Image (cartoon, rainbow, N blue to C red):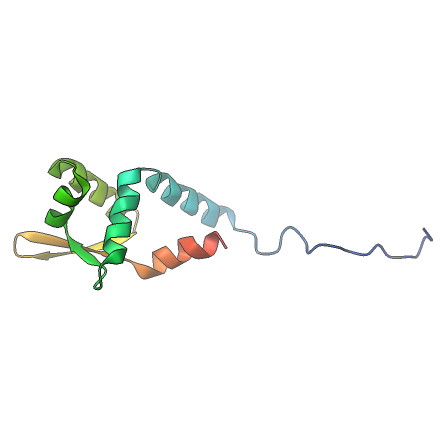
Length: 109
């Protein structure tokens, strides 16, 4: 090869599209939260509803888990900012935060 001949680049630089450290830390936290199968089921059940919301009481029988266990999983998902909640009388309704779900999808593409 001649000294002034440039080397052809076959691939884009590896740093293109790279996550920042803060983004990677946040996503790792979220993926740890989602490492629990019941939490993935909860998100899937909520996403499948036309309104993308579910009353907490509906999840107990559907998941076959005790009410305190379902409440714990909902609390973890809520604290991870994947869900929002609204009290209506004695019931609490949970909704997906679409922008957070989109962020997770985008991080994997």
